[in-house]
Image (cartoon, rainbow, N blue to C red; front, side, top):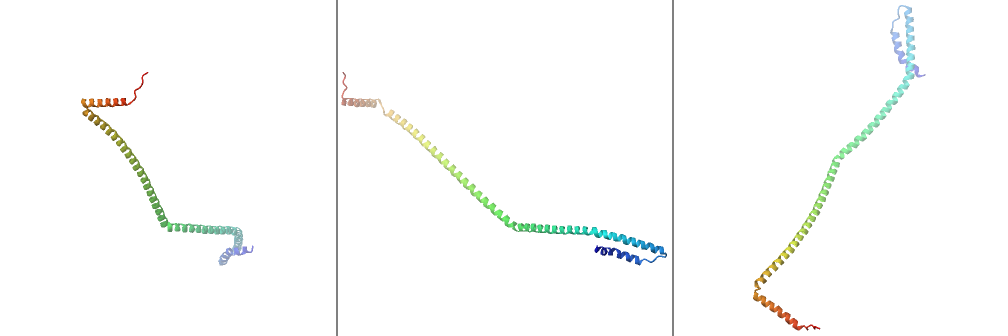
Length: 196
């Protein structure tokens, strides 16, 4: 309540100045009417000031709290934004190093993959070479066996041809008589079997 007169003063002061500046009218009625107008105005201004003082205080306090809360929220958002900005700046500052690290890792992985492929190709090549050598050895063995068989056949054929060529009827008679003689000598050297 002590504030009510203080809040009414700013409204009443200009009204009093305006009223004092007016010239008094010719008739008493006009002065009396002006007094009523002034009283009515003062009463209206007082009620208006009191209503403003009662209602505006809470409004301004709540508005002030909203503004403070908004400022605090803005400060928090600003701090969050600054932290994110700093994090982005750090990442951007480290971006070159990160790119170089990724490139180095990619080179290492490519070299490892190349070495793995080379080793796998060498293993496959060794397997193929070993298989080819086995096949060559098997083919050579088969060819040798075939060559031996063919050589034996040729030798037998040539021997038979030579024997036929050398075996004349006189030689045959000599061979037959030689064999018969050998058989007779063997038979003579054996005891004869008894016939009962």
